[in-house]
Length: 147
Length: 111
Image 1: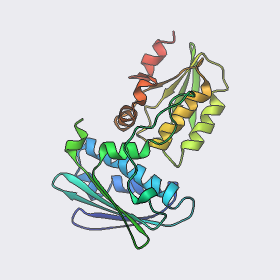
Image 2: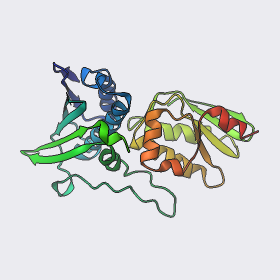
Image 3: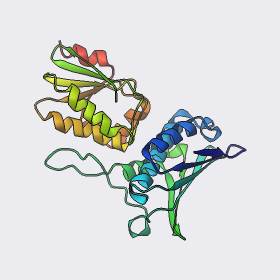
């Protein structure tokens, strides 16, 4: 794991592994880009980044190893997030929908909450696939949390 | 995953002593719950007051434990910290579980 960046910007490079994601999130929680956020936005950022990174580990790299590059930039009270990986593209080349997963006769769902949480907490979600690279950008905005 | 458990009244109180239930620990949590729940009780009260963070995998594991216990043995939750509460609220899983503000509230209901 590599951490760099100045002037409030934080860059982090990590391996696609659930334990590396856990360590990466712990590192980010102490980074300058996080320190500037209020508690509500910080918890939203931690949830969204965890879901985005876990999706990359589970689906883009799907058990293989690869690198994930993260750049966080605080901007006017918001946090701009930029995430790149070099795994498999998102299905249909676009961000999955925002539907809450439905349960069945056996009870409530046990999965499928990830993208729902990302859509609920992040704004301006943009995805681009270019040259073998998945590039996801989004903003964590305090106004989005007041709902 | 380390869990502390004790019987109080009709409830098995299970305290998660680690500060997160995430993708790296969800399976271990589920397996540890399966083991501690072998002690019979009318209901299980899961103390989440030490858990500062739970992601969708952790949420899925809590739901899986609820199903594992079956409809006759409810899984109740207590002591949700702000981020954990947010995940339950946004996914509407707060309507699926009985949630107590503090563990002591859930214990009192057992007596």
